[in-house]
Image (cartoon, rainbow, N blue to C red):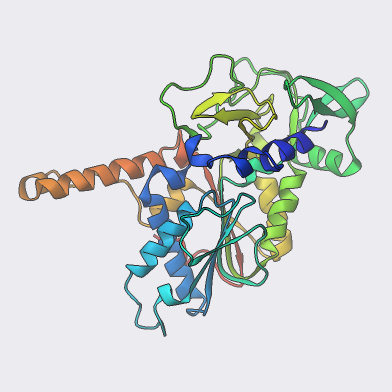
Length: 370
């Protein structure tokens, strides 16, 4: 079967990895799981956006691919502890409408203030987030043959691949548009990419794992379905910002061989789409961004996570050494906080992730000003 269909069944089918399991946090650490500093930065964005929209009632925060609601739980707690601006008619905590979008069953311990849905609501006013969601949107894999580009078929039980039918005209157009040199010579050294997900285990990947850049010859991961998915959620936004945070690449440096890989129990494993592991691939961020901009009718902003978090006040600066003499406990806390932010902003890791901000009826510049 085609990789897109295999991924969909393996991740979101009745016994799929994200539907029937205990949740992503048991298998890998995203920015949401790595440090409370991530949620704190997103909350600063929420607060700025709330003011820019004129303190609407309600103010929506919709998290697509919400896992077990970790980000929304943190934002709810931060809202209840925040001060109310003088211009706000009522506190944000009283106007906040939180919606987690997931196919898995609602967690039993999820606070009732957080709604649980399988689709984003219509007419969102506020912030729509998608943190490491697009990398799990199913995609096809294409390979060049003597008769042109063809889909790669995969056996879901073994991961073995064989060439299949020719690409549809739509997918072929996407490939030729977003992979301007789709059959490049293999470089003498592999193109490097940031770590895409932190291991929950310290043991690292299994020895035979399909690593970030595969060694299985020329192949292209066709991201047209992800463009459609992102455009679909942006269409649900009436006013506000749609924010995608994910690992990915741009047209100038598409990884040769692709990035398809698997994760299970904190370790990187071969991508066998049998439902036993996460199946993920880097996002063609510029293609996705263009799709969202077409729907919104206005330009997008693309930043690295390092740039974005610094703009939102999380710079990872070490506390002054003099604090250790006057407040030793405070110094230790500040040092720990700085270390947590350093992980989020490391350009070779989570800091290399992309922040794609698609505004609708608002400007991004004032929201991300340092």
